Length: 417
Image (cartoon, rainbow, N blue to C red):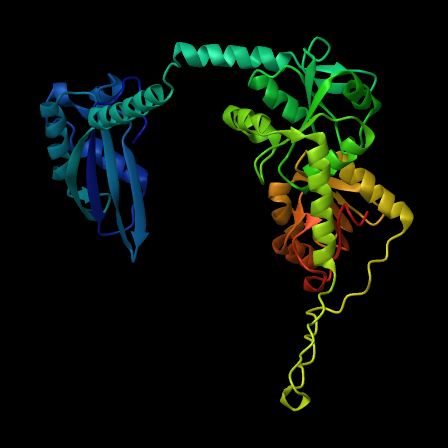
């Protein structure tokens, strides 16, 4: 739309122009004013209408092709419908511009208020939709939000090891020991104020002292890392009960119903020790190479056994220095319960930290800069393939779901460290 001054336009006249020759824009405007002068009387004189602001600035857009000029003309108007229509019809009397014959035809009259009204309606719909989507919460939601905020504010640091804990550790006869700060926050959210975190797999002295004075329940994640914490803590302190989150879930993400269910299903510390020893023995038995049973059929009926399958990759034994092994072990202990990963260079300096959920995509963007990756999770085939393509030397995780002959990357787990 052309610029309008000093008033806003109500209508815009759209006209087309065809000229049998080459002319400039000022020639077209001069012809419009000159050839309509005195045609419609003093009240509809274009020059006077423009001075009074009832006609805006006339916009002319032309282009020249093969020695002929064509284009469009836009005339903004703040007059009524009848007067605007008269001005539009008057433009068609122009038959010559400069030395060239011309044909000017009014195409349409646009009501600007219609387009503005359409914009107002669409914008009103959008505002109403946003208003309805952000409905005011009910009183129960407000109360829950305030209670959650207060509970989260109650987290404190306990003992000389400055462990994250709830406010009822000293006054409560029973306490719950969890892995990390996020676990304490989740328990506080659901009303458990007697939880304290270990902040890693290494057991601090503060936790050992509490085990000697209080009835202790270990509440760990439903993975191998949780079993390792139970095994270490039960070997160093007197633990009364052991509770575990559902398989594959962490204490920090489970609901109140799942928390109560897990605590009701807790077992004694002695029973947990027994189950862990059985599981460890079963794991060791499965890791041994099974022996083929002797075939007692007559010798002439036996078939020649097939040669063993060759592994997919020829791997050398994992060679790692004690210093590097210690660095990996300490770093993995600090990552327990965080669901995070650290990317290291050849000097074992940290290049970056990412969540385990984004580890595979992060590995693909490393561009052969990573030497080792330590993370709180299981090494699976997808992560191993991504690490192999990025030329990563070591993958260090809590456990491994792949066999040694499935990847060229050196895979290390907690049991191997």
